[in-house]
Length: 364
Image: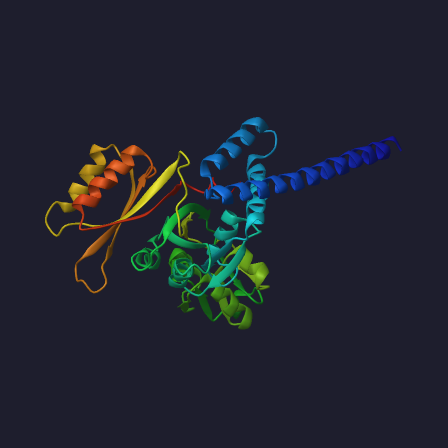
């Protein structure tokens, strides 16, 4: 009887704590609305990456490892994002349909409170952002195994948008179908990248089954839901969304498979103290021109994170180079280096400066 009384008392205390949580959450929401109003009056940007980094750093330091850090970050991500979105609903386009890996990345970055708009291609995601029909878009840019997503790089050459953020998403590929029986599968459908990332597994276990590249993993899951003889390589979210059964879980050929995603919008955020800057450059048509660019960066002690070339459509053997460097355009050394590149490169475009990784989210 004593134990039962103690349980009742502890549960009553939990209820009191939950009531306090709710009261403070409502108070925080009101504070966020007030900050939004003040920022509107001064035309200040709604997103302050430096402020957000300070919030997470302070909370993690105060926590001292008592509450699981991953869960703590996730909880406050939803709180911060919800308060931010209460000022104005954020609309985000992504490569759909629902339950693609890009959809998962979008929710991880913007939280559950944003309004999500599914698009049929990466090109359409860029177009929605450029036309102002949504504030942000999320697109895959590279995979740790298969490399660059060329349709994303090519879209930067076509559309006028800025990079606002990045995040990395660990990728696990599942073979799914309606019945959950591998013998029912006569075709395996997925996006070209997951098919490539599972190439060896498919070759070993389903050598006689043809593969069908489609525009997204979510589209493949939809096909599998509508046809009992189609298997799909899809995400965990797709299994729930389209009521599919798992045939084999984790069929990717290599562990540590990760995809990097970019958040695109109309305006890059201010510096956070831990940023990247992305450029699109065309170099002079003469020997040593690319080395000249790299020498400028080296002389300024600028750390180059990535360089990728893409052919210019309609101009044979002509290329543009995508460059990621560590630092923000507001940092003096980055600003000076970019100024020199702008003078020596026939084509120069600043694509954006943004917080590194996925640590920073929207905040008030």
